[in-house]
Image (cartoon, rainbow, N blue to C red; front, side, top):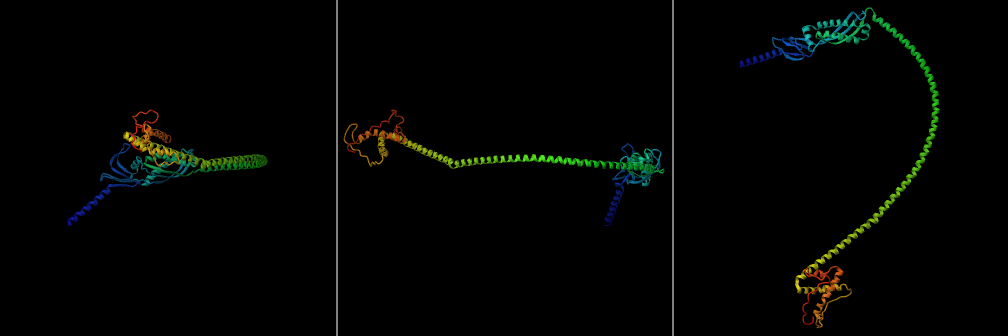
Length: 441
């Protein structure tokens, strides 16, 4: 148990020691500092070989024992730049005071310059070097400008100073953030004299301008009075002209109005006449439609109804005739198939019906029965049934003609066999009647 506890303690100590070692080897760089890790050679972008590497923000791991870490701050260094008795253009000594803000540059190339010059150098010393460099550049810029230019256009002066000092500052590995001129003076009161001269000129110009303005004001006032009087006269003239034009225009408008009234009156009469004509046309159209609805349409409907009734009656007559022809055709077929005896019996059976057909045409005559009396005579015109039978062909022909005249149906033609030639005239002859029985019928 003690062995296990001891092993655990050793493991914990080892882990803590490893963490401490790794932590000491990890380099974490904040954004306002630069880590310069020396001890290992590397080649820069310009081809130079150096024995350090620079970390700008982030983290890295240094090699133990071989590499060491040094830090450089990127914070701004404020400077007060001033020069005294610096000769300007025209050999006039000036005193210039200004402020500047510089910092170690973090740009590639410039940062290596700063590392080579200011590693382990305090901020104060870096600021002093930058200040001396800027003051030297300030004297050089003053030599190219007159005191008036320096005093009047300080922004231009500051920009020229920045342009002049930029190369020197970058060579040191620094950046110039701000450069402003605060005060420009001289011991010989040159600028004050220039100021008084300029002030006098300004005062003189102001007085002259004031006098000119007063004269111009008086002239303007007189011209204004003159223009006012002329304007009043012109206004009266314009008023009279406008009144005359108003009267003329009023008369023209009155004439136009009367003409418009007359046109409107005539247009109203025309509109009323047109409306009355259209109303009459509508009345005529309404009466025509009423007559068509009450007279023409019912008459057309009645005519169509009568036409339909006539067509129905004609169709009925035609169908009845067709039915009667079909009946007679079938009777004819049966008559042909019955032979001579059947034909005689068929004619005798048809006799009452034929008699009814004939007697039906005579009004107020009723025939109860037909009696055949045999007178005992001989020959073709004998009495009794043979005589009656002998008279039947003529009677049948007469009845057939009457039936054909009444109904339009030729019974004898329908009864004639298809293969029996007719004479093309009257009905065919009936077969000879059977011999008459002896005695009276």
